[in-house]
Every structure is written in C-alpha cells, then in structure tokens.
Image 1 (cartoon, rainbow, N blue to C red):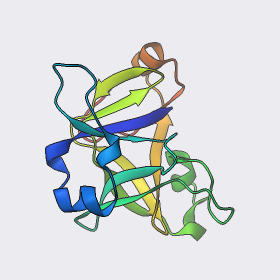
Image 2 (image 1 turned 120 degrees about the vertical axis):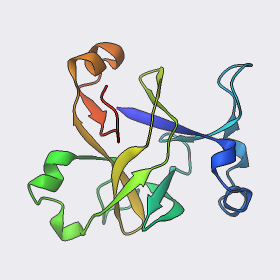
Image 3 (image 1 turned 90 degrees about the horizontal axis):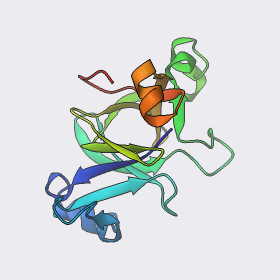
Image 4 (image 1 turned 60 degrees about the vertical axis):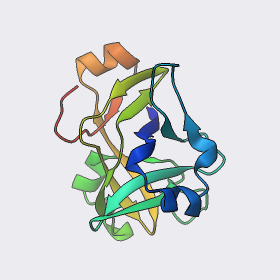
Length: 149
C-alpha cells in the first residue's frame, strides 16, 4: 500500500508550510535530490496535500476516531457500489511528485485520486496491475491521474 507521498518544496507555499508546521517533514532522499516535503502515513500527524474545490488544502490522512473509517485508503469499488455514499465523499486530488510503496519510490506525473470525508483524506485504490504487483509486492495500487503503472 502506498504509505508516503513527496512534493517538491517549491510546490507548497511558505505560508502553508508555516500554518501546518510542515518544516519537520522537509527531506532529501539523496544528496543529488532536491528538497521535498514528505507526507507519511506513519507520521504522528498523518497529513496529505490535496486539491479540493480548486484550492490546496492540508488535511488529515484517514481518521483516528471511531466515526469515520480508521484507515487511510478507500477501494474504488466501495465508491462505485455506493458503500461510502452515506459518508458523502468528495472527489479530490492528492498533490504528489513521488510516492512510496514497500520501500520503492516511484514518480507521480499528475497526482493521485482521493476522496475527502469531513476534512479527512482517503487515497483511492484499485487492484494492482501485474507490473505494480511485481514492482511493489502490493495487491492494491493508488489511482494515478494521467499515467498507467
């Protein structure tokens, strides 16, 4: 399962970095890589950058309370079947240039589909392609915008 996304630091306005205390998430994956902000599911404050209603927002990744699903992912089949309809999910886009799944970083061209429920983000997933399964050993993969993996 995809457990981290990274965004080049220049893509997040400084005011947003300050407002959401994101400075401790700034990292470099290697000496030659540029600085990026990493949003990890296992971070004590699970956050994701999303475009919702044309605006960049930093929202909680999944939920830790009992009123919403506790995980950070939503199978696209659950949306299509109407299972999540009572939650009134809103479609949105996770801002990402890179994503991490089981130790492997890969490029994200345009973003990842997600839904937002009461200011909580759930990454949409679908059954993994054979290539993605071999690459990551995961049976589900994020729904990428404008690319096939």
